[in-house]
Structures are given as C-alpha cells and as structure tokens.
Amino acid sequence: MVAFTKGQGTGNDFVIIADPDGEIDLRADQVAALCDRHFGIGADGVLRVVRSKALPEGAAALAENPDAEWFMDYRNADGSIAEMCGNGVRVFAHYLLRAGLAEMADGGSLAIGTRAGVRDVTRSEDGYRADIGRWRLSGEDPLARATGLSVPRPGLGIDVGNPHVVVAIASDAELDGLDLAKAPELAPMPEHGANIEFVVPAEPLVQDGVGHVRMRVFERGVGETLSCGTGIVATALAVRHWAGAGAPDEWRVEVPGGTLGVRVVSREDGEHALLSGTAQLSYRGEIDLA
Image (cartoon, rainbow, N blue to C red):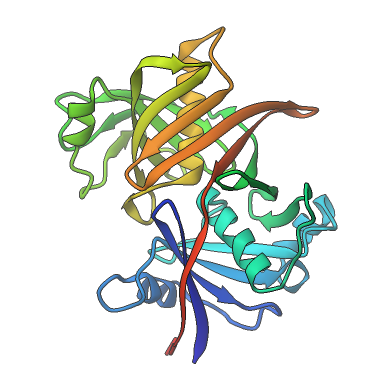
C-alpha cells in the first residue's frame, strides 16, 4: 500500500505521493490508473515528492540552486512526463510545508527542483506565488482547429519551461461554445506537442492598470482541465505581447476553476512571470499500486 494526498489549485487536481528517497518506480500505466476518475483516485496528474539528490534529474536542480532539496516529479494523467506545472508547484510547496518537510520563513522562499529548472515559491495574499521563470516566444505559431470553431485560428507559441500555443477567440459565446472533449489540432504540430489555450480579452482589456482575460485550456496528456498554471501565464504573456507597448505587467486570468494572477518582472536574465493563486490539500488515503 502507498500513502497519498489529494491536492488542488483552482480545480487543477493532483495525487501527491511522498517518496523522499526515490524508492518508488512509478510506471506510466500506474500513473494513468491513479488518475482515472472512474477506477482510480482521479486527478489531472501525479506529483511525486522526492529529494533532488535521489534521482538523476535532481542533479541539475542542485547545481542550479543547492537549496532545491525537493524535486517535483510531475506526470500527466496519461502517465507521460511533463517539464513543469504552475498549479502543481504551488500545491507541491503547500504539501511540503504542511507535512513538515520544509520551512518558509516570513518573507522567505522555497526552492523546488523541476525538469524546467528550479522554481522559487513564496507566500501571497491568495495563497502562493511561483516564479515560473524566464519566458520566450517559441517561434512556433501553428493554426489551431477545434470543434466549435468555424475556421482555423492562428496561435502564438509561448515557452514557459513547457510548450504552449495561445489562440485568440472572438467572444465569450464562442469560447463557451468550444467542445474540448475532442483534442484540438495544431498544424504544424510542435515536436513535443503543446498545451493549447483559447482566450477572450475582457472589455475593456485593462481595468485600473490590470489586464483581464478569460481562458479555457486543453492540456497535452490530460484533456480539458479547470485550470492550468503555466497556461494561465502563457495566456497573459500572449495577450500582453499582442497588446504591444504600454500593455500592463499585471494580469488576472479567469478559468473555469477560478481566477489567478500573473505579474511580469525584470530579472538579470530577462523577463520572468510570477503566478499567484490558491493551493489546498483535500484528503489523505492509501492505495495499492498493484
């Protein structure tokens, strides 16, 4: 039997398994079974809590920041490995603190290793704020086709440690009318796939210096989710890019699971995006991985 904790951030939910010494070899089929909403626990993904020194990927995290004691081994619901998860890293930090595996002093931060690099998490008024890292335009701007769209729409490729394609939608009615039970198609499809965000700017776009948008997302390896942290960041960055000079650095992005904040800040290595929102632990239990 393996102990687990269920956690979520704005409805993006995870099965959390503590494996400090890296003794559990989670197979893709086991992850898929855990995440199955009919026969398993049910989740958008699995967060394995493991010390960075206990797995090969953690060496790069420790080289980047020796304080990154813990590594977020994140798996999508289909068992595939993902580079990062913006909601997941906040839930991961919350779990570490609640489980007594880490401490965060007032005004301090918690360094967490991921396959996209070390991510720093701090407390915020609405829960936790994660530095998602330096962002960039991927240069891959495919056409997106989705059930409910009358014609293909151009997408903007955004890389925030994992790949995204953001697609502008004309109205709230068109956004609500999308059927994301079927995977949207990208042409051409990025080499490693992509999360696909469909976004509608608010009217007016900027209110009291803060940008406002609505978004729905189809996550690779998962399907439509109530929220996607890195997708929320990519959405804010894409709309900010489209808006051009004078666009705000503060954004509020509404998704089916709630609303999260994005702030763009300048660092020595370029612009970073900070994601803030809630993180909660729902319940604990045990399950037989066999």
